[in-house]
Amino acid sequence: MLVLGDAHASDPDRRETLRSYYRALDPDRVLQVGDLECYDLPAPTWFVAGNNEDFDVIEALRAGDDPPETRNVHLLASTAATVGGLRVAGLSGNFAPTKYDLPRTELSGDRRRHFTRKDVDRAADLSDVDVFLAHEAPTGLLSYGYDPGCQHVNDLLEAVSPDLCLVGHHHKHREETIADTRVVSLDPAWERYYTLDPGTLELTGHDQEAIE
Image 1 (spheres, rainbow, N blue to C red):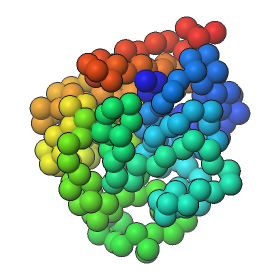
Image 2 (tube, helix red, strand yellow):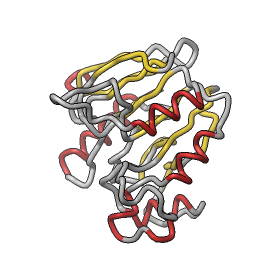
Image 3 (spheres, helix red, strand yellow):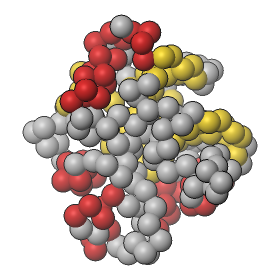
């Protein structure tokens, strides 16, 4: 199973890198942790929305629609799906304290990038999750002289108790065990891709140059 960090594929060079993985590796399923920005893909891809997306497309996917510019993309927005025998769930969006308690209907424009309390509550009700995807990191994973993590993600790890949590946003590979879950912050897709063994949940990183 192919696993990809942030793609930022609105940039033509990064879009080409993203598509090169699909051509070279011919994956039958892909997991991606947000800032995808390309929604017409050659293989089925399950992803969470990041803070850089086409939010008209994201909101249509949230509503269960299939916009004409999309192919093979499946949004995980406080929902779960069976992917390669694994139950994969995800929380879409990033955290803004001033928007957290608002109903989603009051978020407009780029503010649709945020998750809300109801989004977190819905995600917390999911069960039997093997792999959890989030754009935001939990606390205790990264440090820039301060902890950039989001406590709401920690709360979800406690509630959902996945075996593996994959996060994006920070463009840095880091690993920690948090709330008995192995949590991995992924390098961006233009630097590295990952493969996941569905049987063992072993995650292996590969340099982008390896496919050239």
